[in-house]
Image 1 (cartoon, rainbow, N blue to C red):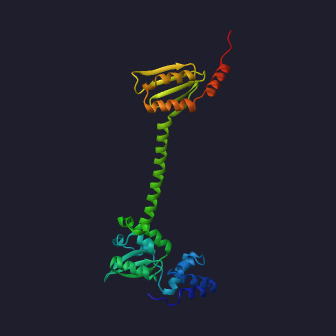
Image 2 (image 1 turned 135 degrees about the horizontal axis):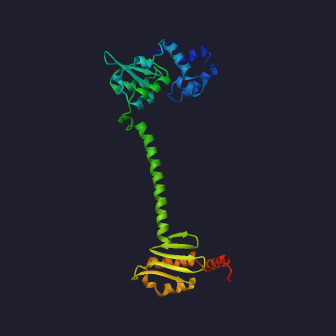
Image 3 (image 1 turned 30 degrees about the vertical axis):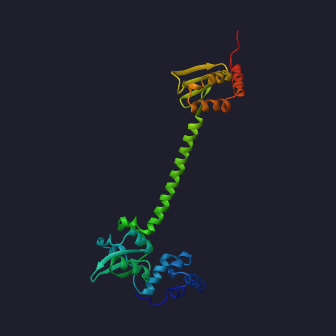
Length: 282
């Protein structure tokens, strides 16, 4: 299929683009294999309908109606990804191994050559509107395995997969960090009248009254602890005597908790708050 007149010349004659605009397009085209019509649309000089009507005049062929010429027998002949890549749609098989093909640009030699190599058929180009081709691809061409396992789709799939892996890694890292933190430092829970520190089957309950309770099971003890002390010093003295009742992790955690999370100042504040809230005697 040969053009009677260059597309740029026709567009200028129809006053759709100026000579300066066409010169700018041709200047950019020199450094790539992109077609003039594609650049004109992308650069905003014309729209797709103006290009189609000019191509129809240039090639002296009509703009086809896809629904009138499409035959279901060709719906699996070309996968979606190739249809989208070249803005084409198979229409029908014709005698002598000819494939009628709807194309946004019937002069696209790369597209014609690729489809002929892919199908093993001789392509007969037909001019169609870009919107009609795009809509028809989704409606008429079924999604297939070839649309997944191809270089074009794989790039997107790889990016999505990588993003999912990174998100999963962040989530797992957060869970792991939380697990390590809890394993080392335990949990803290504040209720109405006390704060409970818990880890390794041991709990330290600090009451607002200033009393401290040790609850739970020492790893080497014969039973469970449920002991209440009037102050922190008493609990610390008890732990020193009973150090062998606890595992190394339990004892280290208890010592660290008493030294770093609970101190006499906090206990004194609790005692003061308790004194304020107690009703007067008598």
